[in-house]
Amino acid sequence: MGWGGAQAKVWPLTPNESHFATDLRLLLVNPDTQNQDRSSSPKRLVQHRLALLLGCHKTTALLPKALRPTAPSGAITPASETEVGSGATDPRPLFSTLENFSMKKTLIALAAVAATGAAFAQSSVTMFGIVDIGVTSIDQGGDRLTSVSNEGQASNRLGFRGVEDLGGGMKASFWLEGGFSTDTGVGGGSAGGFEFNRRSFLGLSGGFGEVRLGREYTPTFWNHSAYTVFGTNGLGNSVNTFGAGNPLGSGATTAVRANNSISYFTPTIAGFQGQLMLGLKESAAPNTANEYTGVRVVYSAGPLSASIATASEGSTIAAESWKRTNMGATYDFGVAKLFAFYVQGDFGDRENKQFALGATAPVGPGTVKVSFAQAKFNAAAVAADGTRNDATHVTLGYDYNLSKRTVVYGVYSRVSNEGAGTFSTNYTGSGATGAAVTPGGNSTGFAIGVRHSF
Image (cartoon, rainbow, N blue to C red):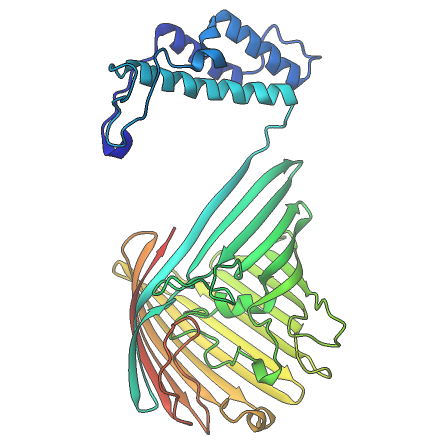
């Protein structure tokens, strides 16, 4: 296609250009020739062959001086390939120049590699993201609130990740990812701007495993996401009744991620892999909200996946640290996939537990989802905060796949509180603020949304 959607004419290569292209390809893919000096370095070989190839095909017209158009050229209209302004009216010189320029870029790149002796290391950078938006209606506290909501199934994100092959089995990688609200366009940063607040790390990997430094998910978070049907997003998310925000009044901020972290991932051996993370407090205070020491072990083989994780996490209280242990498993039977999850949190004499069971099953062009979770808090935890009490959470959903990257989903969820509990189906990221849950009352919600990944 030409500029603005116009159809461009493609001019055939001349016989000499065609032969040159063939020999250039052979130079790249078949470096072993009969006349090769085996004592020469790769750098000298590339220099020598490139010179021979240019000489044999008399390609002086492809040198930088010859890149100049045969006639002065003005601008190119965005709607067609016709050259405008002073210069030629026949488009042939324009496309001939573009063909030569493309070929010359290849030669310049080859010459640069030959001159510097650079290694042919492979590297890539990928831009990726998720956009998730829908309509959510929540009934609680005697009021119903309907809103255009975010992240009903997955967190909105925009990110960049890259990897470079360093040779010898070593690779360098980076990950920069930030969040945003689709309904308003506002970034997910602390001041409403766009920040790489979801993940930002640099890593090195090889036969020894992988080391990452930066802001990253904690080992004890992964099981919440991997072994519950609705993960950690939307009306049915697994942390709604766990109290991940300020867990047990500890002030810890490591329920999902840790700043200033050092992570080590072992190689996978016989289906097992381990993760160790240290979140450095970078403060003279005895405890900080970001302090973290945790470990996770995963086993995956065929349809079975299972994991256990434990950690001593952050706190804003000097004498204590929040501790969390969780475990989960999934088994895929083909006709259905079963989920099981358990977590326990401790902060001093306060304790809470949660278990969840669920299943997914392919039905038609999509997937049916069902989840049941129950939360329990001991007397000390309830005495410290009566709004966090025992609760039951039931969720049903269906994903309809429009394509491999676009899904329309529907969800219905209900939280039933006990005592003076006020857990809600509302969730961080929805963007909605409705009436408070009546203590000991129920919260119900339904949502219809669409998620697109790129």
